[in-house]
Image 1 (spheres, helix red, strand yellow):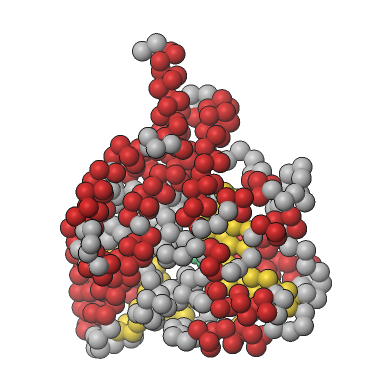
Image 2 (cartoon, rainbow, N blue to C red; image 1 turned 90 degrees about the vertical axis):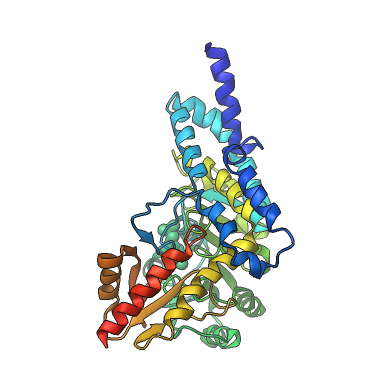
Length: 431
Ligand SMILES: Cc1ncc(COP(=O)(O)O)c(C=O)c1O
């Protein structure tokens, strides 16, 4: 092939990162489209339980059939189409990194910002693309103008990286960081809002809320907390790491001021991708964590001066969005909740088994904690893997002690039947 033709072909393939001719369209659009056509007119509830529909989705993944991965809350696998996009962009980058990364792939960032904003229901000028929720939220936490004595309220059940960031601000700047504590599950929003409100003092400037508590999956009433906080003149930072790409919500509906999320969790974007949202009028006052020449600019792009980063990973996000949109946010949320309820409602009745999470869709979705009397979380996690090759994670954090189970769209009912049988057998043997 002559070099000009080859170049043009590469550029048009590359354009897949930000055009309709994406790998998703080449590989999956037709099969998902025909599955979508078949279920047209079905109720959401019926689709959530339609195994033929979900088998089309399951086939898009390349997960190892010899283990049952039920720790998708940690990080999720990407569908094949996303993996292939990353590989393709990586190969291209290595044909001439500074040319292909900085002149070709870089052109994909603005269309990607728009696509993410569309899913988030916000303005593209409020979205910065980065590497993970930790980076997004640390940018906000360290970027705020807080002085000694100003107070921040969080919880003992927030994510450690954010707790540590606030603690570092307390050490360095003398802010007061107050952590309240919850006993989950809680099926009453008003009690949650009241607990935050009770901790407010005249010096409180910020409330930090974790949208879905990673340890046990409790969905927090972010909008209600934000309304209460704003009524007191307090800003709200939302850690939406587990919620974006899982719950069907639009960011402005949360009414928070700042939000950070990973995209490599439920959106199944390439591992090492994240996003930050800052309400437009607040961008100017937040200092970037990694500095650029215009730290007081009102342009959200000031947060994207990350140095050399992975363009293949970033551009792969576009394919994950195509895949997510083809299923649809609501349908995905309902299926994953269905899977959680499927296994948890069966083991809940087994003597010696405890469920640590609400099974109601308003209070939890994918994540559910389980324990067996007489076993530590590490022992239960070990038994599940040793004999059944079920991969989970044991949780011992503050007042929480359980094994966390997190299915995803590719999880089969057969996998969950193995889980139910395993927990039942282990609990019965312990009696
Ligand atoms: C609630 C919560 N916030 C933030 C993070 C950090 O995500 P990342 O490692 O992608 O930065 C996690 C990771 O599991 C999390 O559970």
